[in-house]
Structure formats: structure tokens, C-alpha cells
Length: 478
Image 1: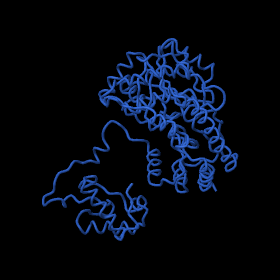
Image 2: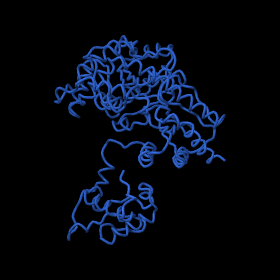
Image 3: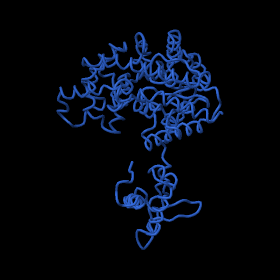
Image 4: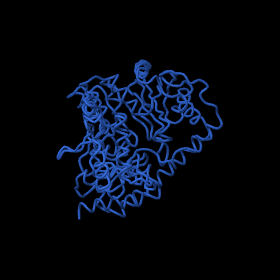
């Protein structure tokens, strides 16, 4: 984000006025559009409100903007020519369309992190740089030549990567697959998007976990789907709840994250896995299994995916490198019947003609290399260490004011607060003190739950971040 240059001889208000004039000239703010408030703009730019007032006054004097009490400050409609010109109502377009924006809390977190990079990030569900295999990937890129051809690739994905994934899925996840049953995507969310847009229709009923990461994805509502809840406890969902939802609502698909579930960290028990397959087989009901966290298991072997037990073909399996390697590679995959893969590959070709071949080549080399297993070993150790830091800090700072079940893998700690405080006020107070987290209501829960991600913050920031959260909570309860 642009900031005024405090070393420049030009006054700050003039720099701000020039910058806004340029953005208006480039139609970022078309005639008639509303500018940010003086207070919000001052906060974004890190200046006093009086400085923004002077900048607005400068633009008003030039006739570029106009202010009305109670209506805010808008770009003038008549500055850019003698006669008023008709311009599209971009605000109406921005508010229209069928694809819904992110949830308000998620937009607030994103904006806060963008405006204040020094915030301690206990919200973002991705690996920190010190957990990603940066050196290993750099070494591979030095050792290999990539992209001998830079044309469009197969929309189903780069063949050598699909071949590498056949071996990877068998070795690490116990899944039998072929190259034709695998589709490469830009991550789990694109897989989910393709499924909701291509395999389901508006009005269809689907079942998702409660709480669930899916509640944070407006793509389900954008697709016009009716969402029904499957309560999650420490052993996962109850399969009989699926049967009941099918009887009442004729659900067409079930979306599950059975291993180190986001946000609770739960792992579905062996007994419930068997019951789940029995119910799905009886009803002929497809299950979408999102499995991003299994290889982060802290002790013992990773829990098996449902897909490894799937003898009837009920499971659409989704995986990703985002939570175990590098989200910036944008590599995910789906294992599905070939007819489904072909349907989704056709849709993908209409969208973007497929992924860039270069990150697919890097990913294929990485999972076949001698670097991969040592990276996983190191990742598991470091994630467990960070998890323990969060837990120790919470117990020290909040004691019996907070409770949780310790996850045995994954990136998240799901907590219940004893004090009853509004989610929005708690998030605002936390941001004001320098830390962000995700309120539980983002995942469909009532107020009183929070999710801390321990993978993104630096190790040396975690204790301070939890202390700041505790201060925010105490400020609302004392």
C-alpha cells in the first residue's frame, strides 16, 4: 500500500492530494464515487487526520472532490468536462453479481494485516516462511531445467506431476489412483469451487461439518446450495446424522475434513469411519474428503484418509501442498472417477486453460526428491513446538478462562472462552493491541469460540501474541 514519503521536502498533505488525484484520474475512483473517510484514510496512511483534512481541502479547491454533511466526500461529477458525463455506477456493479464477498470478519482481518504488517498473525491458515521448504525448492530449481515448452498444458494437469502423485498417494496416504483419475488444481478451494459449480445445482442440499471451514467460504452460498449441519465432537461427525439429513432434506453430497479437522483439530474415529461408509454406500451418497493436514501428525503415523478405505467409489478426495509445503506454489489435486475428472477439466479449460506448468514441474520434482521426507519430519517437529508454545501461553495468561482439546496434528487450536464477549468487540480490541485471530462465528459457531493458528506467527512472537489477546479479553470482562 502507498504511503507518503516523510523524507520528501513536499508536505505530507500535498503528497496525499497528488496521490488521490492520480487515482481519480486513473478511474480507480470514478466521478461520483465515495472516497474513504478522513479517519479511515488517516489510519491507512499512518498520518494525523488533520493532514488528510488539508489534502481533501486542496482537492476541493481544485474542484476534483466535493463534500456534503452526512454524505461523505465524493469525486466531482462535473470536473472532467463542461458537460456532465455518464459513467457506470461501479458501486452498484461491485455490490451485484452472484458471487458473494468474503465474510466481514475475514475482510477485517485481511485489511488489518495489510495495513499493519507488524500485527502478530494467529489467524492466517498457512505456513510461515521458516516452515516452508524454501532452500530445498531453490536447490531443485538450480539442479533442473524447467519449462521446455510454455504453451497451454492439459487442463487435467501436467502429466509428470500426476504420475508423481500416483506414487505419493500410494506411499503416504494409502490411496490407489491412476494418472487419469487425478486432476491438478490451484488448491483445495479451486477443487471445492469446481465441485459446487459443476456437480451441484442451485437449491441442492449438502451437509457440512459444524463448526466447519466451509462456513467461511461464501462460494457455497454463491452456488445457491442449502447447507445443513453435522455437529463435530472430538471423534468427528456422527454418521447417523447424515442419514437423518438425507431423510429430511435429500442431501446430495457431504463435505468432510476428517483428519485434524479445521477448526477443531478432531480426527474421526475408526468406528465412525466404518459407520460412515455403511451409510454412504446404503444411500449412494458422495462424500468430498478434504485432507490438507494429515501429514502434519505430531506423533506416530498419519491418520488414514477415508479414500484409502473406499472400495465403492463414494469419495471425491482433495489434497494440497499448501499446508505441508508452500501455499505460493498453488498446487492441489483431486482424485475422482474419470468421468468427473473430465467434466471438471472441461470447466477448468473454460476458466483459465489450466495451471502454469512451472510450479507443477517444481512440485513433481519436490515430491520425488530426497528433500521431501526430511522436510515433513522437520515440519512436524516445528509445528508441535509452536502448538505447545500457544498452549503454555494460554494456560499461563488465561488459566480456567479458556478450554480446548489439544490437537495431535494440523495448524489450529480451537478454544472455548468462559467469559461471554461479543466476537466483533474482541477482535477489534485484539487488533488494537497488535494481534489477530479468527472468531469462531466465522466457522458457524456461536460467540465464545476462537481459532488460533500457530503455523503463521514467528516462534518468538507467539507468547507476546497470546498475552495481547489476553489483554483484549480482560479489557472486555474486567
